[in-house]
Length: 306
Length: 306
Image (cartoon, rainbow over all chains, first blue to last red; front, side, top):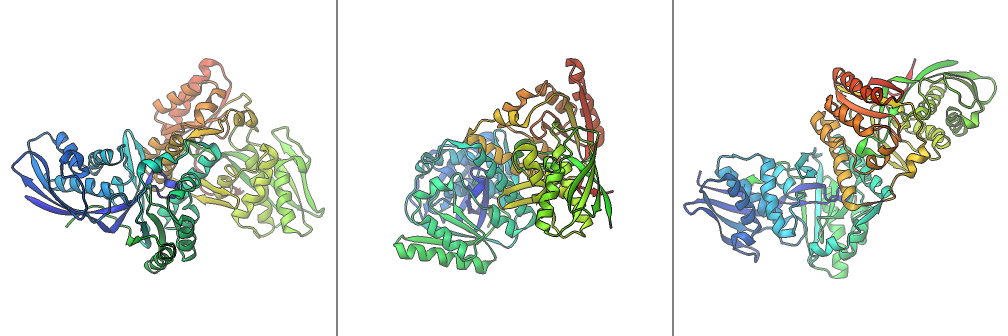
């Protein structure tokens, strides 16, 4: 096989009490990468459609992730990548992770799959390093593994796939304002009380249990974050109103996607997810913030070969 | 039915990364309570065998828990309780929780079960309040529900039953020294770094996953506590050596049971659990600390009607 096209989905990281730990893979929004074997060794980004992003391999997240794979592979192979961006950079739903994950999954496929999914996560994390300044795994993990993932440890890398209740649907609203990851990091408090940490572990343990037992009411009770959300939500216009409206419309829970500004809600069933979207859109229509909405089931496969 | 005998097992709380959240029910060590309907309204503790503990109802954990139930029940009923203590108070394996849980489960049985297990936990917690100064649920929950339990919230009370992998066996070593719960509380640091809290949530999420997937290697990797164990373990003689020996003998993980001084280890299979016991006993034989050892499967039922 000489060429392949992959669909690399968007993702939600920092799911409420799962700050820095828990992520999920979306299904119907993502980047498409067309990857082709090339006689010239190395990686060339030939075209980027839909967004203005650097074509230089070393400055492009897909390029950097692909180079990390090639460096490990060792042999003199080369690939070109044409990138169709379906995710807006800076939206908080894993734009860089999708490009990085798509590149390494596609190249691995063309090399007849020498690498495990866990190794692919490591390579994709190198793309995240240039995008965010740190090689985090919360977005690339669900994009590569599908479903819900928990990053237990970064060093050594230990990522665990959780169960995905089939009726869960995500609603994402993206206020079209810029929140820099660095700013979202800066507002975080470095220290917290032991009691807060205990409450967070309790909720995360309960949320993981809710996912395994497919207990939607337990998921509802545990989708809370008393540590990060209170400080970060000030960067997101109308956050409390979005949350109140979404929950009133039946959402199981609502939180900040990644480091924002997108806000996600999880619902049981497509109908509720649509009602939740409408309820959140009303907030931005009223205060005049431009927005984009996505409604998506949870993708249990991750990156797909098209 | 006029009388009943119940076996109320010991328990392990504060399981590693599940500080204040995660507990498990032991099987072959516990208190036995003989409870009988009485013409005299109220609760009378008629006899306590095996330990010196107060007979006055209001000063006895079983008495206080039973009174909490009776107060809610409202009708003019009375019971006598004869308590055979199989668990040493202050050992860190839920001595007060067993007595409190046994009393309310036994009385509920004699009243033809008007109360749910969750309500019984609330009553038993009142016994814990006089024993420890706070109405915590980490020990009474596994004793009443059986297996592994997660206390998501105390107010409102929300306790979740987890899965118990069948081959898990607990080894407990109890150094016969006194560690007061108040002292064990006092050494705790009130504040911690966000990074530490994230690592703890990651490990607890992974541990809960390991329990559901019955993935013993994942349980091994997640049975860690970088927050409480480092400060509390100084109160336990030879802690690091116990842990090193237990893990070298094949334990999945080792930690402080409750607020100590007992140390628990979890192993896959009875043979390993016995090897772990021997390895831990060697430490106390060498340094001359008197000890008692228990090896127990995880009890999935909780308090048993005998």
